Length: 378
Image (cartoon, rainbow, N blue to C red; front, side, top):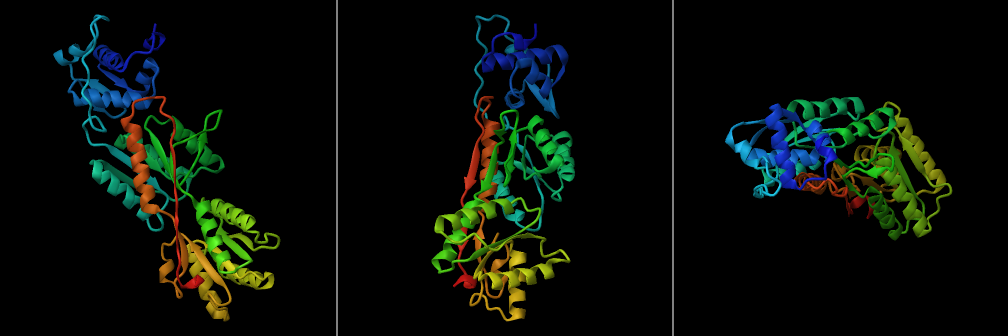
């Protein structure tokens, strides 16, 4: 009969079973222990970390080995009437430094502030961060994540993965089954037959877009358009918030400018900008919400070349606020709480690592953006 066939042990009994299995085998893997003890891999990792902090075992990549000797024997439960010693509380990581892997799709736009927030939170708790930049490609993200789990041996992952398409869906399944806890950053995903949510920390981009629309409506604009870029995971949320706010405020959606297009690095962008401006003038659109800053700045520059005054003839609000203030005129912008997202993501992962309860419910954290009003909408 396997260990899992017996009644669920108490934590101290379970840790005694871990030591006993190690005494018999010399080395065990996290996944094997989780199966035999009928608990989650996270619970096993916490048990191993605690036992290692007491000097009873030694952590290795993917599992543990026994130091051996009398110390191990002291925890073995030989008589069920004799309780196992109570373990003293230990800090996160079992008294050892936590190592957290972070994978983000870019290191030069949007994500540096998120990373800064993660690093600040990690520094406060003494954790080590191993950062990898990907390329918005699921295969690249999978390669980076596999390296962090298998070669570095991280205790947990913070990741902004691709979640769409066949490769993205496969990556989400891989994250679900990896033996370290995972918190998604600025992404959401569901797993399993009942579509349970994975743990995540996200900006409320729909609310941010709605803030921009309400600001424009308060200035008297009745036709507010939206421009988003293809392949952007943020675009669907911005368009949803724009549409909901227009409906709530009674702004006309019939004939409203709603464009999803290439970004400003694409050779077709210059033609797109002229088409957008032509359609804005023809439809009576007087205000645009543009994602993201580079596209908004390029659009304003083209307005100046064509003699369209910003904000006199067309009011522009951008989404991201990375470089919006550098535009002439400085752009009103929705600013996602990037540093706060990093802080919250690390805190959520640390809380998951600190809680050995396999029944701990998944947590989803949503953080509110801000609207920064500048000259382009004054």
